Amino acid sequence: MIGRSLFVKHVAVPSDHGSWVFLLSPMVIGLFLGGRWTVVSLYLLVAALSGFMVRQPVTHAVKIWSRRRSGAELPAALFWTAVFGGLAALHVTGLIIRGYGHLLWLALPGVAVFIWHLELVRRRNERRQVLVAMLATAVLSLTAPSAYWVGTGTADRFGWMLWALVWLQSAASILYVNLRLTQRRQGFVTDLRARATLGIGAIRFATFNVVAVAGLAISGLVPGLLLAPYMLQWVETILGTLRPVKGGRPAAIGVRQLLVSILFTILFILAF
Image (cartoon, rainbow, N blue to C red; front, side, top):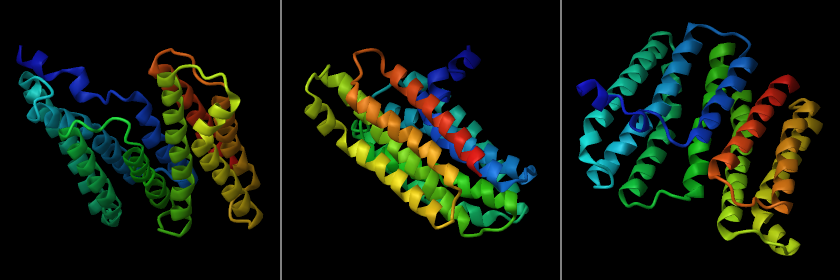
């Protein structure tokens, strides 16, 4: 009976399944571009995954304390907080012992954004917070330079460029998904100008990404082929703006963007 009360899936596993790609895509890119996988890479991967997972039971506990969920699930929330927190602490210790304790500074922005998120949860105002989501993806994108630096063994400047590159795509993805969800809520719009007006923010961001990467490629700082994954997101944004979503489940929107993000990750790695 006790085991059944602790092993509650929605308490332990993040319900926003599409958010996984915002952690795993930067991590995979950083690991491949770093060129060398070691035990330290494993420490980093498990620490990042554990830190990502712990937000679900902690958020659930805050919902319980703010009387949004049943108190009967508090033991499960505390149990999984301890499990994921313990795993994170264990592998962070491994990073410190191996001489990579300086990477912990990159976790500080994540703590600040998470506290902000928890306060919004307490106030029952966490839904459709685009700015918070974009800041959260900026934090998750820090796994790219972390994995890259672990692989190369040196914290060179390219790691920061890598962070900016992967975050720009994640931010564009957040804006695009928000656009698709807005289209779903307001219903089908026949007027082309109204569609374009609704999607102009997402289009501008995706266009900026393409122009910025093109500029870096011309300067010789990145391969020219790196334009391909950003063009993929740009085309998807244009098509999504001109062809609004018609009903359906929000999960379908997330799955499509997940596929786009997977393709982005593959093309990004191949470009280098």
